Length: 253
Image 1 (cartoon, rainbow, N blue to C red):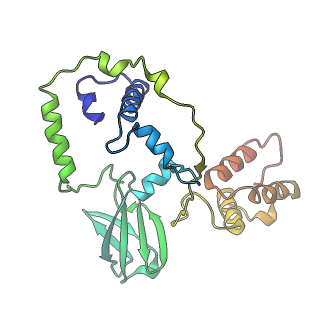
Image 2 (image 1 turned 60 degrees about the vertical axis):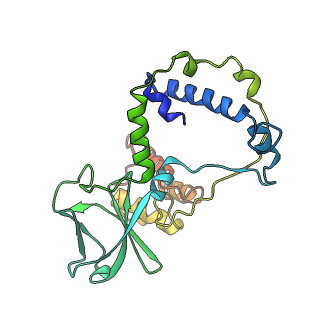
Image 3 (image 1 turned 120 degrees about the horizontal axis):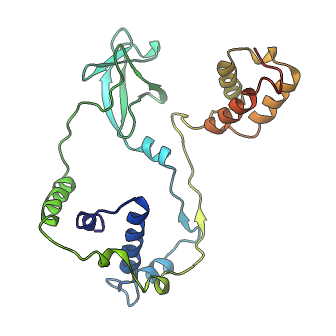
C-alpha cells in the first residue's frame, strides 16, 4: 500500500523513505479494527502471546532463505552447468541426483543431497556472472504491481501527505513488548563453525601454518578466542587484527 505512493514522489534517500513509511504505519495501525471496537494496534497488543513477538533474522540470513530449489543430476566430472556457467561440486556427488539451491540475492550455489548439505560453490571455467541469465514468469502479484505502477503515473498526490503527520507522537506508544530472539538454524554453516575444531582449522588455513608451530603466547590467545565465539566473521576479524601487527608481536611465519 505504501510502496505505490513512492511513485508519486521519489524519496531523496533511504532515511526519508523510512520516515514516510513510519507515517503510513502510524496512520494504518490507528485505524479502527475491521471486526473489533478498537484500533488495529490495540487489538494486536491484546492478542500478543506470552512469549512476545519473534525477532527478525539478519539480512544475511534472509538472503539464505530466499533461494530457489532445482533438482539436477551431476555429471561424471562432478560438474553441473546452468546457462553456460559451470560449477564444480565435491567429487562424491559425481553422477548423483541433487537439489541445487539458487540464491536470489547471491551468485553462489549450494547443494543438498540426502540429509547432507554442501557449498558454497563458485563458478569455474569462466567469469563469475553478475546475474544469472534466466527469465522468470511473473507472479500475479508482480503483474498487479505493474498495473498499479502504470496507474500511479497518471495520478497525483500532495507531497505533504507523505512528509508529515502531526498526530504521530500521540499515536505511537512506548509499550514494552516481550521479544523472542531469532533462532538461526544455519543449515549450510555459512555464519558459524560447527565446533571448536573447525574454528582452529579455519585459523590454520588462514595463517597457512599448523597451529602447533605457533609460539605459546599466540596459541594460548587462539585457544581463548575459539572458546568465546563460533561466528565466522567475528572470529576471522579478530584473527586478522591480532596477526596484522608483526612489529608488536612475533609473526607466525
